[in-house]
Image (cartoon, rainbow, N blue to C red; front, side):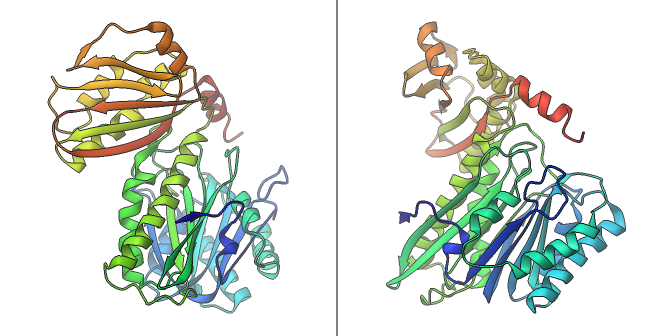
Amino acid sequence: MKILENMSVTDVSGFQAVGIHCGIKKNGKKDLCILYSKKPAVAAAALTTNTVKAAPLQVNIEHLKSDTTQAIVINSGNANACTGASGLQDAKEMANITAEALGLSPQQVMVSSTGIIGVPMPMHVIIPGIKAACEMLDSGNGSSAAEAIMTTDSFLKQITVEITLDNQPVRISGFAKGSGMVHPNMATMLSFVVTNANISKSMLSTALKESVSDSYNMISVDGDTSTNDMVIALANGTAKNTIIDVENENYTLFKQALDYVNTELAKLIAKDGEGATKFIEVSLHNACTKKDAKLCAKSVISSNLVKSAFFGADANWGRIMCALGYSGGAFSPDSVDVFFKNDKGTLQLVQDSAGLPFDEDLAKKILDESYVNIVINLKDGQYSATAWGCDLSYEYVKINGAYRT
């Protein structure tokens, strides 16, 4: 697998995109984008686990039943969530207008929105914006599309890789947004992944479901699961590899590349947590089962007390033990080892669930860095899991105390 620097979704054959400012955001920043496959593609999606689902997700649940998908219309600045029947009609209208402009059926269009909850959609600017954006589609605007989905994000999140299947170059590229209201089991995050791989709809769905479980579902910023979270993948088959319709060697290679793209995007979301000063990685080893490993790792990365301690560079390892204890994962409470690790060194703080004397100065040096790895050894089995997140700072409260206003 090759990582292709400075490339975007429009560097995948057959895909076009564009991001524009249509008028939803009052600051003039981009707030609408279209992602388009010139050839009918197959689609797969993972949607929020929140019972309160935004209107676009309700539309997508129906549109995913279509055999083919060719476009995604995405806006930022308004979530179109908790907006009742009118909001659902607005989401359908966004699909209808996009379909009409591109010569598609509405069922071939997915819809996504992100921003403030409970505010009516300003369709008087969105409708002409969609029409204008569709006329501006080309193969060089991938980064502008990634920019248009940002809300409180501080940087673009996109990645492109290339693999070879049946001597054909296959690319997978994605862009994402997410900074706050981010929690395992989907978060306030949107991610859109495209590939020119020739793969069946059912196998793309299988690959995406498994990939999301080990990537986006293993990040946490603040413990909130949003109404709008989604990951959508499109595959248009222009690479002309033999179709992947079973779990063979080509499927394995494709899945590994898809996992890499999704994991890197998930990590970028965690790094960009609202107000974050540190990127935290939890590496949990030797659990009884994969489920136990994931439960334990997710519990530690989701703990606000752990996050707060890391913001203050306080080596309060007791909070980690506490988070393990209420995780719901099975493990021996008398056998846990805990380490802090980064380029400043490795420091063991806990052995067999009991605290060790440790160098406070070294602990401070490690915790003052922008990246810290919490390494946990349960010594109970052979399964591992990794989770990603960030610290919880004063700035997070400041951002979210005035998010609507």
